[in-house]
Amino acid sequence: MTEKELEEKLHEIARAGAVAAARHLAPELQPIIEAYNAGEINLAEARERVEQVYAANEPRIDLIVQTQRRMAQSLGQLTAGSTPGQLRRYPAWRLVRVATRMVPRVDWDRRWVAAGSAIGWQGACRDDYVALKGSPIWAALGQGSGGFRDAIGNPFPPFAFGSGMGWERVSRDEAKELGLVEEVGNG
Amino acid sequence: MADITVDISTPHLDGVTERLGQSARAELHREIAAELQQTVQDHLRGYALSHHASASRLGARPTGNLENAKVTASSGSDGATVTVAAPGIRRALGPLTIKPKYKQALTIPVAALAYGRTVAYLKAQGVNVFRPKGKNYLAYKENPKSKFSTVLYILAKRATLRHEPGLLPRRETLAANAAEAARDYIMEGAA
Image 1 (cartoon, rainbow over the protein chains, first blue to last red):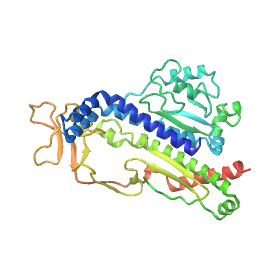
Image 2 (cartoon, helix red, strand yellow):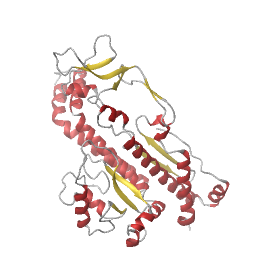
Image 3 (cartoon, chains in turn yellow, purple):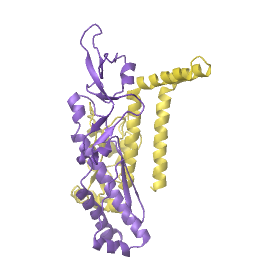
Image 4 (cartoon, each protein chain N blue to C red):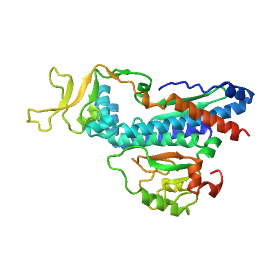
């Protein structure tokens, strides 16, 4: 991915976040806009009511914004991790917890097995959450293989809404020990 | 954003890069930038996971500011830059004084209910946040008839966050990782 493509993708992610937040708030914002347009309330009142709507929906907007930030961050990681040198030295990713959660998901084993089975474990470990950077297991995880409906649809973390999982680099030596590098050369 | 310059030049490396053409120098710098971007990101996440002191002390949910920090890299034939954007990241370079931008005072959370939440949000949730007369804090009463209130936020005109050099990787680590990426490029990538 070129820097220009990355920038476009990041803008796309930001736009999607703004649209998602706006769509969520639209039913509550619309009457305020209509009341202002009809002259029933002045600008200061409209502002105050809009602020109240945002405040009341803070956790939901937080979730949307945090998810978008995590997606943008992972995309940056994906790009940085895909240079020839990085692919040579760190050919694989490990799925790890990178952010604490009050109530962490406990179904990552099932998600991993379902995604691995769906792609015939191509470039992926069965016993560890490790797979080559180019393994289709990442896309399968993002698509919610196995029927996980909270999947976001991207081949990079956070994979599911509100998830605290992310990628850690796996060195060539470790990837060799896990039998991944011999499988498809440079990864 | 925090700016730290890491000089990895040595007479030997300088000699090698001088012999490289412009395009090869750009590739070399791209590899170094990619390495440092990930070194910084990995460090921030590790730091965040092990330093949720404020949230843990209050029994609250961490804000996620550090683990979600935006770390980007750019590079060219002249050099490479890694940029870190996260609230309060400048604490890595020295004490950081913060002041309110749009409000009269900073609201510093001192209760789990308030941590990572705005006053407006709590009010929208029906929490009757009030400022006792003559006091520099905001509080609420769980039972409106009670004479006891719980302090939620301390109000401050400014606050100074202490210097946290551990927020970013040590210069030696950055220099060693950059040098390793350069060595790999010269030995393997440019071959």
